[in-house]
Amino acid sequence: MLQRDGHAYHLTPKECRLLQAFIEYRGQVLTRQFLMKEVWQTDFVADTRTLEVHVHWLRKKLSREGPVFIRTVRGVGYVLRLEGPTPSTA
Image 1 (tube, rainbow, N blue to C red):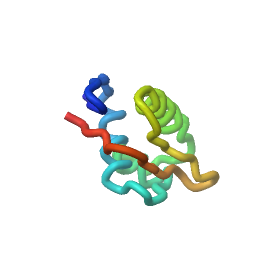
Image 2: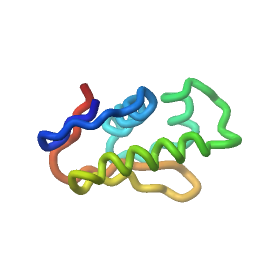
Image 3: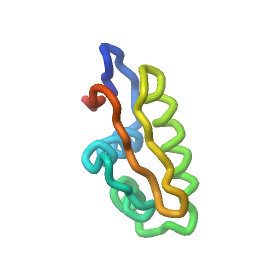
């Protein structure tokens, strides 16, 4: 469950773990390899489409209530830039 500005949103377990990683390392570029290991417990990174889809879903949920940005760092991974209150997972 994601709570932000008095609103609650259901997150899948993987979305929740992905958001936790982004919050824990906010402002730092997280490589696709790191995220695959951290969230999916795998070293397999030949196809990161699963990661890309989960990031897309998470972006959609986070953008409903204001500016939270998961930015793509081309060829590397993603970085979370927060503006405003930090979302919390429950």
